[in-house]
Amino acid sequence: MLLVALNLRAVVTSLGALLDEVRDGLGLSGATAGLVTTLPTIAFAGLGALTPWLVRRVAPARVLVVAMLALAVGQVLRVITDSTLVFVLTSALALSGIAVANILLPMLVKQHFPHRTGLVTGAYTMALTVGTTVAAASAVPIAHAFGSWRAGLGVWAAMAAVAVLPWVPLALRTRAGARRATPTAVAAVPVRVRPARTRLGWAMAVYFGAQSLSGYAIMGWLAQLFRDAGYQPESAGLLLAGVTALGVPIALVMPTLAGRLGSLRPLVLGLTTASTLAYLGLALAPNRAALLWVALLAIGQGAFPMILTAIGLRARTAEGTVALSAFAQSTGYVIAALGPLMVGILYEVTGGWTAPIGFLLGALAVQTMAGLAIARPRYVEDE
Image (cartoon, rainbow, N blue to C red; front, side):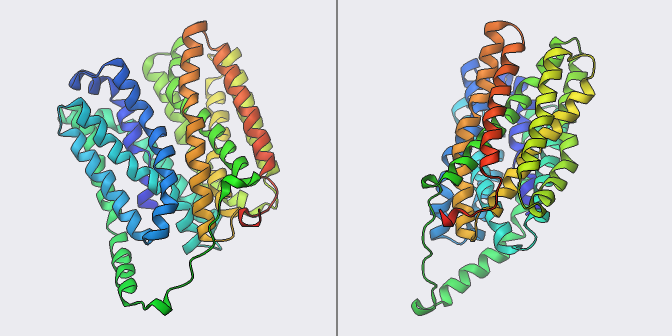
């Protein structure tokens, strides 16, 4: 699970770091570059929604093996082509593997570690954060070392291939077991869980979406905000990386706290307070206490590991977990796609950061209301 989690954002952040080089190398238009940067949320929303359907027909371990192979193959194919269309399609192939793995991991945690949900979720979200940070920080140096952006993107395919290996024996055992099973030995098909018909499901989706909206907006625009405040490009990049780096220990601790608390209300309100102070600081004094705003942003982004943990905490069964995970993440990523887009539009129209930060504060208010709705313990199967 940790090896899989390491791969869940590297394909995105490595491309972001090398986007200028890729645009020059392939001759991408501005519109095509915009499409490529929007592909993650499109893939995560659309293909993630299909994962429960896949899991009902194929063993989860086998689905995960195919997903990781798609990720590895997609990354290889996109760096050996000179075609813009092939680059977009193979990027979509790689992202489809991530979309499925995104949904599967909370279910697999629930299935294999039912009494250690917080600890294991914390470990894999920490691994995800480490992979995100390492890919963003090292993609450019790797490209420079090998003299091509293709190396800076393609190297991560090896990490995806390594992540497949531990799952292959489990997938083969599952297949062999299925061949040996008789019709009378097959368990009854569980009742389908439909989170879209529950208040809890929608509250989870809104919280996940609003949190991801702010996260993608921060990843896309925070460095530009610091540049506009007078920081050198290198310093602005390091400040952005600081948000992710500080998120590593938070990602480890947050799920454990969420699993131990009877109600998530204190965490929801605490995370909202940190984000609010960070946004106000960035709006009023971005160049006076930048490290403080970065630290507060990192704390506020602890909402991501918290909501991943809550997916497991708010379902009784593995089937309920995968259904809730698919609905919350696929619907949430549709909402998240608005973040970088709206921030960019408001920044271009107003020429400053007051309106974009006001938009993020509004999204935070929506996130908080949804968080309070999911705070008390209950289960999606009961609704």
